[in-house]
Image (cartoon, rainbow, N blue to C red; front, side, top):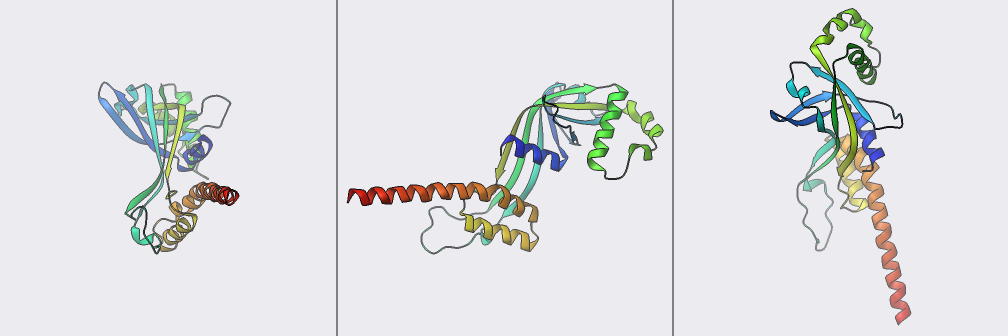
Length: 220
């Protein structure tokens, strides 16, 4: 995936694994986040964690892993074709994941933490507001949390969505996944991301074959 598509996935999911390395070794915490709007600089995620979670000591280089839709793909959902297959049909797993490479910045200022809470609730809550907490009670809890800012240096989006198959096979597989209720979300991503990739590849192959036929006819 290109960076724009990967960031769309990041914004859509809203939760991921913060991975750091410090004196205690490798540490991982699953955290909800808010992807802040593009202000022309580096994109940022903001959230918080409990002060008792020692991972906040690992300021510096870090990784944030965000998982998108995934589904086990049984050979039974892959269309069977007559003739010899070049590659065998085997069980596999379709998945979408985004790796954000960046660095972790910790904030202890109550004003910053409170703003991050507003950003987080605005991202995840359609109607509930901090004031419903009530706000005074939430402010008393601020010393118990640490503000987390993740500054994104690189966005690596990876998607394995059966893009090695033909467009007809992928459409049949996506229909089976959606109709069975197994993973309609994965089926939607297969159609949206993999089908254009496959169509472009099939177009290049068809053009190459056409050129080869013309070349052969000209040589005769």
